[in-house]
Image (cartoon, rainbow, N blue to C red; front, side):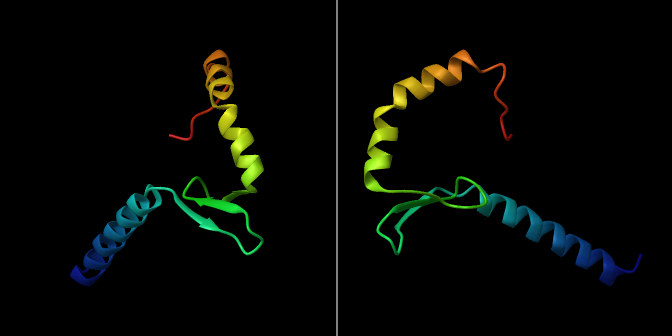
Length: 79
């Protein structure tokens, strides 16, 4: 393998690592065109809900945590 090829491989590895770390960036929020709240950084697509839906979901926070704890053995983790 030539030095140029080796250098290109190293450059691509460094770029892949940078992109992986960028994918783990903090979540960002934005108001959508239709007036909903979109949260970016959770997955491939944003999670978009209207204000009332977010408030209802936030009010269920303890129930969701309890459900996750009760079903931890059945739930998969991404990492």
